[in-house]
Structure formats: C-alpha cells, structure tokens
Length: 50
Image (tube, rainbow, N blue to C red; front, side, top):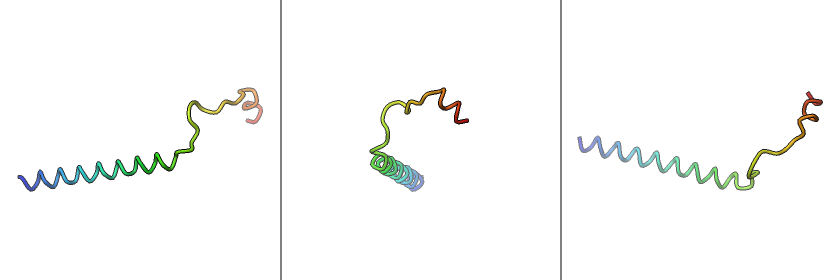
C-alpha cells in the first residue's frame, strides 16, 4: 500500500511539474500578444466585405 501511494504521489508531482512548465513556456512565448479587449473594427465595413 505504501508503494502504491508513493508512486501515485510521484506521478501527480511529475504531472504538476509538467503542467507548470508548459504554463511558463506559454507565458514567455505569448509575452507580446495584444493585451486588453479585442481589436475594434467597424461593423459596416465588415458587412461589406462579406
């Protein structure tokens, strides 16, 4: 039973470390993305294009 708990906790810790690393990589990669709301566009012009 102790071995099972050790393996389970180890796998959960590994999974958490991988998810954390991916979140940090994503944060660094998208550092220059547009912040705030969406870009504004005129609805009339958008309807003409379609």
